[in-house]
Length: 81
Image: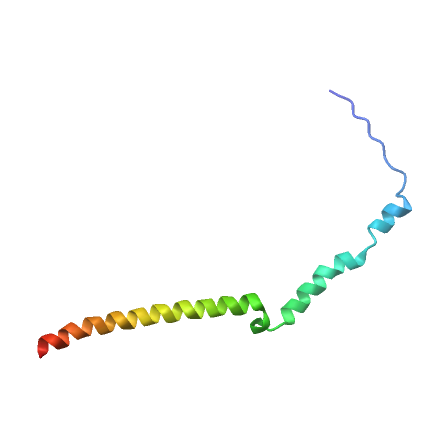
């Protein structure tokens, strides 16, 4: 079995400690997420564009179904004449 050498650092250097003291870097994304939660959905551009696209697709499907219904009823009316 191989022997491993392990050296333990006695303490951290001051610049290494200061590097991890940047709480703005830690809190920044949290604050941004909290702000986003309080923003209404209709003011979010991605959500608004997605909603418009969904409504457009629903309208196009509905209009196509209505056209097919009219085409089905027209031949029946011509046969009755």
